[in-house]
Image (cartoon, rainbow, N blue to C red; front, side, top):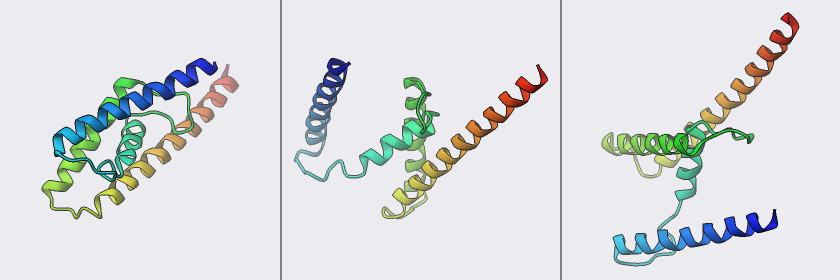
Length: 120
């Protein structure tokens, strides 16, 4: 179990290095703040893709769909001239709504399981 955890940390570090090289190649410079708020987009993509914030659910394909949806939302906000300071707030609201819908869905599933067990 410990080797799996270590290998995940190593893989994460290697992929972060690859992302840094790609980003510095695109920008022709290196900046310590170039990935600022990128974690918000990654969390939003996974949550919007249907992964449970409580754990136990989610697939890679759904995370990719969530990433596509986040990019469409960001592109739409850019086309509508939404301010750069307001865009993270909108993404945050989308995350809160996705988490809330996940919690409500989980409660409804529990209620339906209880009802189904009572009827059986």
